[in-house]
Image 1 (tube, protein in one colour):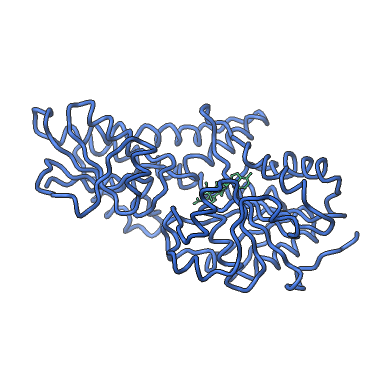
Image 2 (image 1 turned 90 degrees about the vertical axis):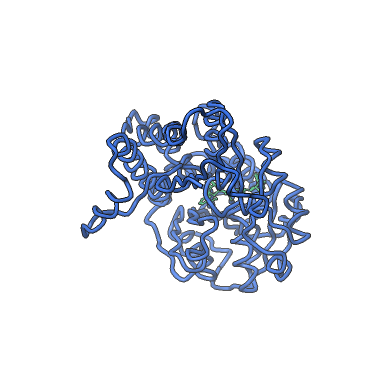
Length: 398
Ligand SMILES: NC(=O)c1ccc[n+]([C@@H]2O[C@H](COP(=O)([O-])OP(=O)(O)OC[C@H]3O[C@@H](n4cnc5c(N)ncnc54)[C@H](O)[C@@H]3O)[C@@H](O)[C@H]2O)c1
């Protein structure tokens, strides 16, 4: 095999990050901080212009942090023409039928394939189902570029574990899973990430890494579904869930999950990637499917519980919901259940306000038509009930 590119030689690394969102931006920051030559490319020109002027709409980086970086933000593909490492971090959502939507992934793959040269290395970070990189991305790269994997370019998958708003489990201090289509790809990709993380875990194949990423999030979804079902049951029986959890958690092997709303781009999405791939293989996944149904429906139970906790008549009652994003303290509105909760309450004649410390007022209006309040605009005495919906155990009368 011809080896034309060596990550041991750090000076030869010209990194292009494709997609500069929750996953791409921290990668750009990490490579920039260790002095790598890095360009971040995003097709969203507005996002690129915001980043150039020091604004991260996701609220993960401050203006000073962005301005201290050495790399460039670009919205033209030409800016990637001289790159020899491409890290693809574009969205992999589901469509209206909860089927994997690979549109962005395929487009990004095509864009990179059009410009790669011999010796290039392509790493995917976007979450995909087992087999997606080998069966969808690899043939497309070879067809468009005319290059051959293993001979002309390197290929791998390194799933992201970023947790928006979490300052403890950051890219630099978590274990990063890496995988390659062959030994050379694995070695090079592992060396690439060793530049920016404390520890890498080399998966034996791309499929293992793809499956492991899905399992990490599916495990959370299923466990939260168990807590949600238990919460629905115990609350009907007038047994306080917080006490049940406190007592149960004194057992050495009890796992600490809580009931809650499941949102964001990962946990409510990734199970469908495995469900789809399993179905293609004639395999049914009833537990995983049921967890999705349970977690999607729990907002209705929460709505009913809030309604029941108010004294009649409901018309004219006022409720404040603390938080609009999919979890408290982040700006990410993807798959948030709060607008649905608000609608359920309003359907009962209740007047609902929402406040959130991080989400922008303009974004809330644009995406959901919600007139968001900021904390200093809230007069808690105005409300019959204030709820913190991210933790079902806290439903607080004012
Ligand atoms: N957000 C998370 O917490 C998280 C955690 C782990 C894994 N992931 C996975 O990482 C991937 C990215 O997620 P994210 O949250 O960063 O998404 P995001 O929406 O925040 O960012 C993706 C960016 O890619 C850009 N983009 C889309 N198509 C493009 C293209 N063809 N070329 C260049 N740019 C393009 C978008 O404009 C956007 O800015 C997804 O597969 C997701 O499942 C996300």
